[in-house]
Image (cartoon, rainbow over all chains, first blue to last red; front, side, top):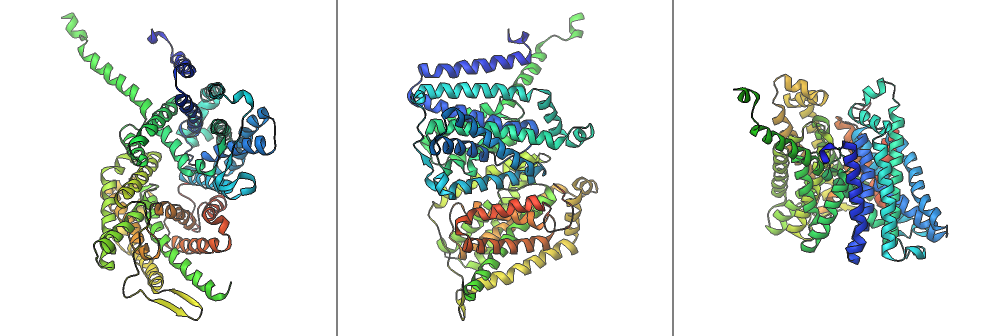
Length: 327
Length: 291
């Protein structure tokens, strides 16, 4: 039955299936499962937003956590400190992250390859330092705690469904962006920026736009983080957090739209599982990363086509050849 | 601030610059010749420091012998890593980046497993354990040794690059790797040597820094980003540029902490952002190869 469907419909079906699975979690899951799944959802959003840059546009950002931070802090400061209505702050957080992304992006995209990576890293560190040192506004080291959401979000289930709804819509939007003519042109730029330039594409502008869009979605992930944990502090914004997300993208597979999602699910589950047995999570993560990079450079999502190709070749062996039939 | 402590700080900054130079030249060599961004360079430095601690404090060996053994040991680790693993990722720079980063995580946890999280120390070696006192200026004699050693190593590297056959091959390889391979040079072996040598310099840096800092997990992250700043600041493939950039960065670090203690950790990143925005090809006047 699946064979008859086009690739696009298959992906749509996969997305809807995933949505139904997540929608059913509160019905069957414990409170911990719901909490964990909420975490999973905004991490998926965060990882997929990073992959718009890494996988689709070939821009290796190590500072994506910076926009997550700006979204989270902007929302928290507006909502808690200034008493801006919830709905307004909820959208203003990501928008401010996008504004920051335009400014940082303007400088970053002028550089390529490792220079780009290092500048994004430097910007993220500077943002971290600001959240850490600007105590009157950001609460400094201890951050801002007790961010009480409006009463309709107090039950965990409601927070979960809001997160699920927002993440589902945003993932759909990102899917459309990635498969639009704009998104395909980004792939061209990733493969060969010079050629794209020759055919008259404004490469820098395309890169700046995707950098901004990506920052906007990362900002949303940050807001959803605050919604769940009701707090924000500099420790969750350390550069290691950026690396965690890069790891999710790599492990899941960056050349597949759904790859980072798989990576986020696998690594978050593994993290919660490994932490019970050992404190050396980084060792485990490092080994997984090294093995994936060495043997499965296309990540987990790249394994399935690899297996199916092997399987087809194996099946082909047992088919009678043309010559044998006629004889 | 009186001029005495100013001079003391200046000397501390100079020796800090020398350590940065040792790390940054290795990084710059690996980046220039092989095109690899080696995040694990800080780990090599940390391993060098821990090996020295192990040999000196736990086994009671001589500091000077320990330096040699530790840096050679790190060189072997680096060479093996390149020969058996990293070379499989040739031509995929973004994967190499992630791969070396994976080893940052692996090494840091292995060190924690082996030595625990408590800071360790190595005392100043004889005969350099005394403290210099000239009026109000006070600093360990060991710093003088480092400040003299740094330029000597820089000069030796310069000679190695400009006057030897290996140096000529390296310079050629940094311009065009494929052409060098086409001329019949065993490029794989050369890459292993370069990577091992870079690791050796980092290990040497880690071994030499032992008496002046506390050896603790996380010391890798403290140096690797400043070292990258030096690499970018100095410009690729220029020992003189790297040396000058290391000296400046060392001073910026020391005086940054003194004058702006609230910004201490972020100072190096602000410097990095400024360099990347204003002059991404660094101090050298060559156009950038990677930018």
